[in-house]
Length: 335
Figure (cartoon, rainbow, N blue to C red):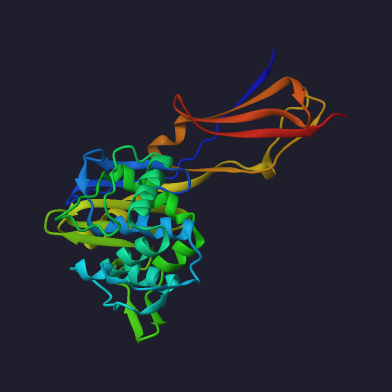
């Protein structure tokens, strides 16, 4: 029979809970380190998403092309309106530069050019939906790569867009692009100087980047990232008339309410010598974002196998209340 040890960690630091008014129709606040949803409002309601569509467009390009390749702009751009970077038919430009125009200036012409010249428009949109399903965006349908919604519509939820936000941020090039405040590019016809239109990046010191959007039907939409004191959050808001101020207030609230705690420290892991003769250790630690009123609900349980599997002698299970939030394997050597 497996042996069990229960280790309970306590802390008594207090954090104020701030009251805020959320101006968005739909909102999600998510911990990017563990994928925990800290706050939601109408998070599963399907809505138009406007140009935050381009997060998926950017990722599909990054995963399915060589960004150092040049492409030739075609007449696909002639149907584009709204925000553009004003590339011209016959212009030769790098995919990488178009990605910066896509994300910093929200170029609809960049979006359609990337789709047509990487996979082809229909296959590209199919890949957008395939990627959405892969990461669990079950209430999302993409019908174009730009987010304009007068002819075709992209439908998603705040919850699904948070999943996409988390997935996209794992890509190093994506992180670099969205954190860029100013970018210079040169094509076969002209030079470009682009400032990032996502104003939170300049307005809020903890912001790491993101993507904004707007159409009259969708309203203002925003996906953003911020980091403070090892607390790493992403916020999604759909149909929000005051997107930047709202995200600032939400970050202030949740940075104040939550702290990143080391629940299991591999350097201080010990098992009572009366329970095992083996030298046991962990290869990694486990941290989790918690509010002060959740601290007493954290429990860690160490299970030792009666029959070790190679050098795996057991596991540490971390629980918040009755929910398991993490697991680490216990390693060791037979004496």
